[in-house]
Length: 109
Length: 112
Image (cartoon, rainbow over all chains, first blue to last red; front, side, top):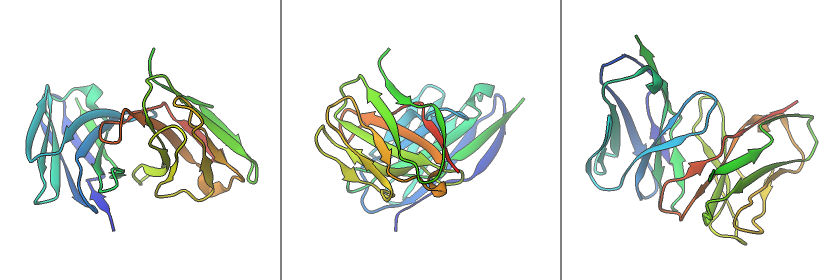
């Protein structure tokens, strides 16, 4: 079967750095996405990785290792507005997205 | 403002009733999707359409139907609602099947 695993919840301090991990087992791989979802709102796109390595976009970076079936999202200089759920999704061999359950990130002052 | 709209925002429905959730996008995206999101579970694909005139089944299609008569609209119909269909429903679209998806604001549906 297809499976995306990520921690259910994480807590971090304002101004700090946090790493959210995602491991996957899917039928085929055509890219990995990270989305941010604030409570009661729609998911919004953060990053996309299809090749191994690190993609940096401002305070957010995403890493991919295809051989390990592993990705992480790194958030630097955390702000209170970063409190949200972070969703990992893998595009499978049918080009459909398989979604993890999301990691709820709580930022404390 | 370009984007995706969904209607209604929320709905309480009696079991057995028929319900259509509306989704409209003005970005001229070819592909559109319907997902449901339940607590503790990831987004699950219900149905999708890669281009106007075609539709396909996702992971959880039973009890739902869709149509794609034109590029902009992608309605989702529950023929006879059941309590297990209580969920938040998101419509999404993408320019193709290989790029990021843009999501509508969601419809919160409660079936009693």
